[in-house]
Image 1 (cartoon, rainbow, N blue to C red):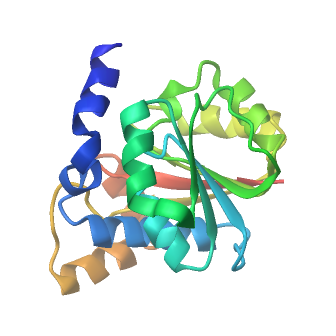
Image 2: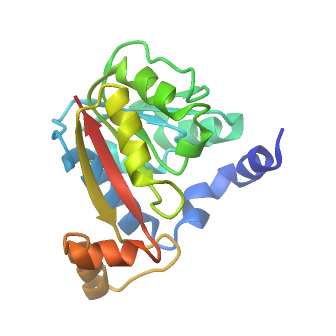
Image 3: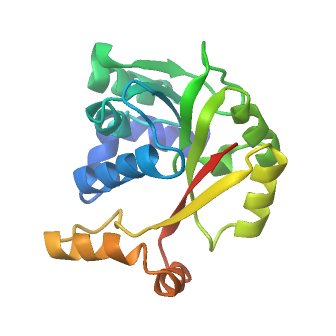
Length: 208
């Protein structure tokens, strides 16, 4: 087990509670964008969440009327997600590079884990093979060249790509008015792009 895998195993029991200062606000906003960015998901659509952790996002997606399937490479995370979601969702052990769901899914999500792809374009093509509406993931523009990632998506068959800044902070709790302002700033064009030079990430929704 690598150091990172050991960390995930040790933190699986309270991952969502410790990873986010305000887990409800952060994951609710993420879930809303999973549903609405790019082609809209309809109630009953299934979301495959690769590297799902303890299934915290699953609760919010289920609340939107979506079906949820979680996959994680850490057995302790799979156990924690199974406890959290119970019979409301399927949770499985698997590597995001190799996992194939039993049937096509409407959307596939990969959060805080795209760097686990062994070869990025090949991973995108793999996901395209079983994803009917869209692939959604987060992208740090200071870590990755955005144009190169978009080229890999198009090379894997994703012709339509929507980028949305995501400004709800992970490690700080914002009072209501500031939280609303952060969400509004996401759609501010040049100002949002300026903020992304310093911190925060994009959400990417790629479809055919």
